[in-house]
Image 1: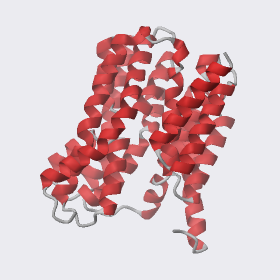
Image 2 (image 1 turned 135 degrees about the vertical axis):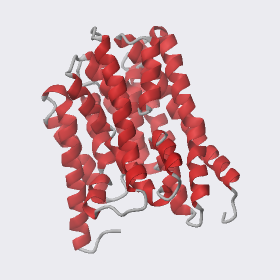
Image 3 (image 1 turned 90 degrees about the vertical axis):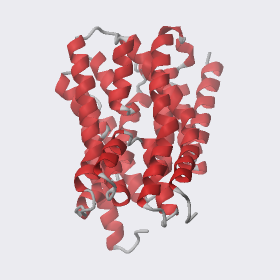
Image 4 (image 1 turned 30 degrees about the horizontal axis):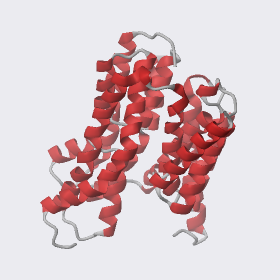
Length: 238
Length: 111
């Protein structure tokens, strides 16, 4: 695929991103339902999704709002959940860093799990893509996913209370996150990071205001980084 | 979920989280651009997702809100099925499907 035009790169991204609508739509709908159930208006719920565009952070913030946690703690916890966006941003910088600032500014807003995962996989597979094709591909993956995030948040906010508790929609979040995380466990270092973070999260669970999440995340990252160093020192890093 | 909270707080959270998330997404793409980053920063950033996401869901799996924080066999099995199928297939959709099928199957069987 060395001679793909910019336009075909966009549509290739669109096709690769499209299946994620199946995950994003129920997830967005669940946020709409839970947010209105928690007492947010339909407008607040929709703007939440438009402003943040990140399910995990939105659910975290919502949960803490309901628990009446201090505002600073809500923001710190939810932003900690979104720290991975900085990692995505860093990881895409070698590919998109040379494009005009306005394009990077727009791409940054649309940097989500799905657009990142599709794009980095494609860039690593087809190393001969031009900057313009890479940007076009990125926006292609965004096109089916992000609008559905807004639309289904709104649908969830509007149908809200009509969803019966027997549907156990509360568990859509853990299942989706587990499913997204497992394929990311590419090396022993990733596995160590995840296991250490889980152990710390469970042990620190009694701590107020979700501090356990931040501590577990930081300790997990350090464990992963140290494991990587250890494996490298022994020549066993991939 | 229940509880009434201050609408001003809600708006501060929405705006603050929106601006903060944008800054996190923009920081490297926008400000670093073509320059290189220190290796130790990248090394830690590589593990952010696999540390934060499991830490976020572990308490939700062990102490679900829906059961009032009681350990729930249906939800535990669903989580195990999701991880198991995810490890074998490396496929997000297969893992979600296995988790959902197990959850509904167990909820039905356990009445």
